Image 1 (cartoon, one colour):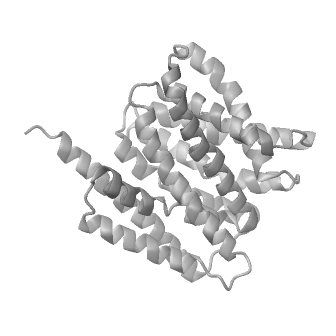
Image 2 (cartoon, rainbow, N blue to C red):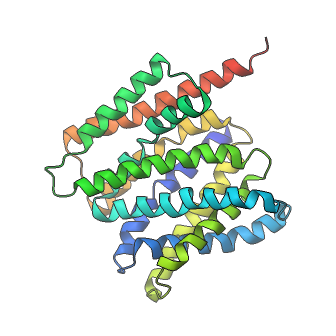
Image 3 (tube, one colour):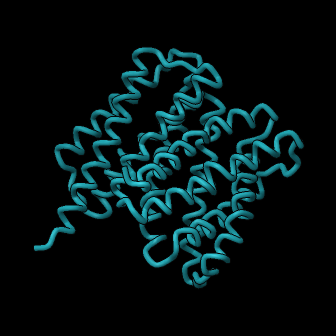
Length: 288
């Protein structure tokens, strides 16, 4: 097995811990905005020397408006919505609703980039939608209409995250693009943040910034030197599986048989869409 696939697996596994850290930090009575702010702030402290060592900062002023927009959607909205959905529902439900993103990315690809919706993509979309209907049991005490709405909206922002990322890394180094995105996202978070946090929460905040944010990104970035982005995205779908396992082990969160079937459909649909995109890229890159 290529080392790149192992690095993608490790990165995705770290991303799967995001909801776990959020749940633990809510135990210190921190708000979603405060948790996200310190996640971003501490990650920036780690990325600053990393960028300086890797070649400094080269992005010009003309690109700053783009990164301000990117930071608003992919950091301020995405991170905050995801963490708040965890707070009002559960790690399991939040991560599964997050993985409705392929629905929106496929539809946005169709309307924005004229990417065709193939039979496989249509099948995958049907699987994801059916999976959501099975996972979302509004009669359950943990899943409220607000949690469902915010969870689905998180999926939208996650899809936007991926689409904007394609533009962000066309000419810039990924680590530099990430730095600017986090920096602008942090600026949007400042007005809503309570900067006073319990001392006991600091190790958890640092771990949140280091493992799923800084180190997860470093692993993924290095993996892309050996593995195509489209293939890496397939391996990265291990993220919700890891999140579900950790939620069960740490918080004893469980899913009903119906929700487990829904989870399998959502994850399976996501894998099919990424696999289809991978195949489309291969065909496009074949010599005529």
